[in-house]
Length: 106
Image 1 (cartoon, rainbow, N blue to C red):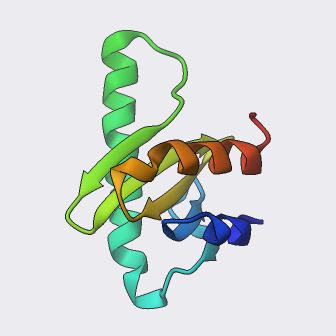
Image 2: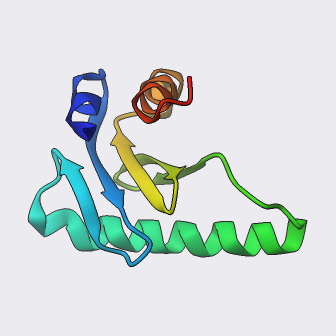
């Protein structure tokens, strides 16, 4: 399913993470890099939960984290989160479009 994201210029890797923190699917992501990426997802979920609580918001669309290794886009998909790591923030529009097309929200 998510392998197609690797065809998008600038995308380094992607992972679909379940509510329990387990990887459901991954593309271009080495086993050794999983712990760091799962930590990002967990931290992102904590930030989103806090913001939702403080703002009385029901849902969220996406969260962009610009970390040392490059930007990471977290996108909700049901009770899962799609993590997409890419090369530069200037690629954000292209990556967002590809993610939305993949998830069927375009």
